[in-house]
Image (tube, rainbow, N blue to C red; front, side):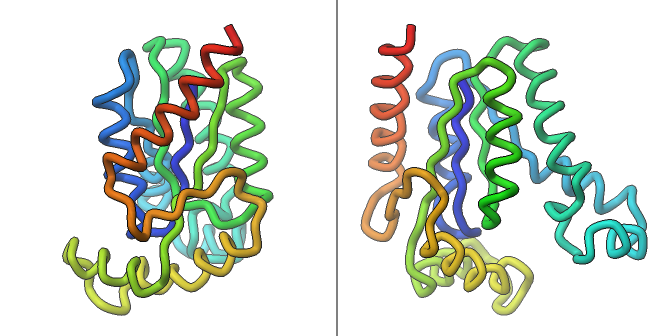
Length: 181
């Protein structure tokens, strides 16, 4: 099983993903952002700009391809459920990655955590992010994209605790997972 936990920086996805790993037996965290960080270190900025047209590693096709391929290797090598926190705001990128995950034969779920811009900014400040940094700059783009739709099931985290979000995801994935066996 693969559980994708999508959302803006500050929406609660990393907290939820870490708790899901604790709650779901035989699971592990698989964070595609680490693949992106590696690409940012290895591929010179000018080359990234030429290939992707932006500074965002998600615009590199190799990031999306490697995310899927590495997940496939993790599934084969370790045999664990993957919990995947990610901030994807483009429905076409989500479809590409989700389609790749589904092609592995694993049941794949996607949840998009949402909250208001104000709540997201409050959470970012609470975790020590510097006002105006890159993650702050992504908030409007994410909030707008998620409001337009195309992100499967959304969970409004505005007034939910991490535990409530986790229990909701567990209930949804467990119910579907049991009926598919």
